Length: 286
Image 1: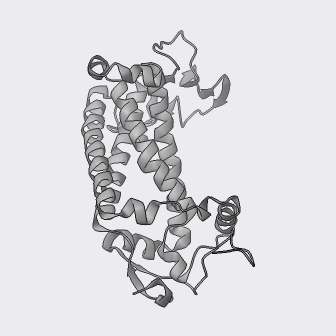
Image 2: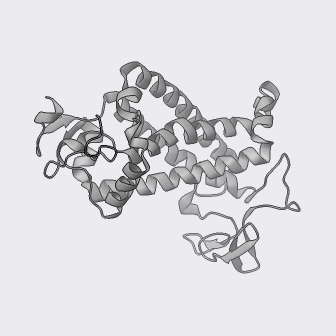
Image 3: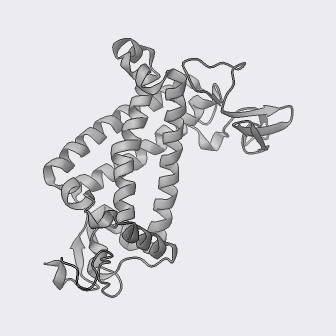
């Protein structure tokens, strides 16, 4: 069925099997890695720049407690977080003095060794799945056809139009809903080709064994502590992407969106909206 023939209510094939498998593998993998990573962070809840870092060094991020007060300190600015971060109570009512609470970590009780096993196991799943997905996406044309950003889409007017439409909760309908918009393309490219590789390679940089095998990683990322900081920044950017992604799914119609990521089938919503062409003005050549 050609795009010109598409109409509201038509069911189309929107997501390839490789995309759907990778999507759900990523969802589980990143959740486990985030929660186990927070447990690992609990062992030393400070982030630094450079090669070395210890309690007496200047940290740009600290999550700790001072007496009975929990706090987060970001570049010297302190905010009280008692009961949530730094100091909190477990389900038995016992006070715990750790950065992240039990319900945010794997395992829920403090166990650095177990957390590392969880983290490293799922890190390999993430790395292998990302490599296979990239190769498959290049092979089947997903990158070229679905994620490639055309010249007109880079127009500031086009990008601003898409931003304002999303701010007004006006999503593409009809045939226009079939393809990714510019904001989706930018965010997906950023996650697939920047954030995920960054989180993998900074993770490798923190490994003493990898330091010996690939010492160039230390030079690229400016030391193990800088790599650790970049690792956590990338992780929380992924969390931010997830929150925005889930908000868009709910606002755009969760049943249709989730079904499309399970079965690949997507029902075109609303009435047909013509695609936005900001660079075409009267008298201009196509």
